[in-house]
Image (tube, rainbow, N blue to C red; front, top):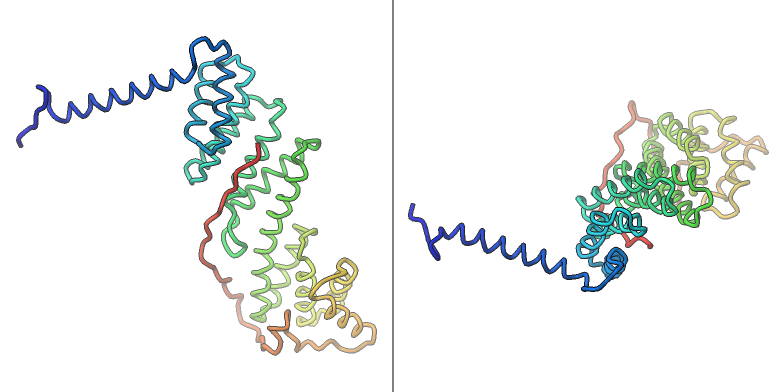
Length: 307
């Protein structure tokens, strides 16, 4: 094979030298970012990194913050720069950078456990998983991870100003898991496999008694018990629905069931409808619980986290 030469060197060597020169020039350009005569270089790097972060120039921000962290270990800006590195990874939002963001936030908590912004790092650990949550019909691993991190936040930082936002997102994540469980139970209910539906609904209420849409769980659990000839067990769930919810799509039907109990009228166990669109759909028992359906995966859309 004939080798190509240029300036007395193999062409491949020429490309290598050129690449090296470009990298060196780039490095020199970075060093020149600190103007001559600047006395607080760490502060300068932090301000430049923050400016780049606010403009969503993730890579540039990370360069500034990394230089500060690596070269100024005694700087008072070092902890915030460490968070800036993590935020820059989170801002990119790719699978790889999310992993790196998680690592950076954990390192921050390891290095600066008593820092005034430790609550922020813990919040962001939950947010990394929150931004990757899937729909209720999909795998809930990321949702459960977000719940775990935010439960740790609630335990460790009860006076944090971030608490209202954490509680709101924590409730949303818990609702996502509960809705996933509810949909499986509803699937069994529609198939007429009431023992499986009962177990699923009861387990959901035991794990998350404050589930936002528990009125639907109360109703379908009560109906499943009625259809299993367990009328005495069904009554409390209709009663709880009426007492806990002033507005619900299941309220009228729950009141009807309670009136039937008071009047001593045997409930119409042939009624299978959970919503008006389901009315009249026959549901025959099956010999074994069917597998729950799986929908297509979703693509999460992470938001830019607050600073």
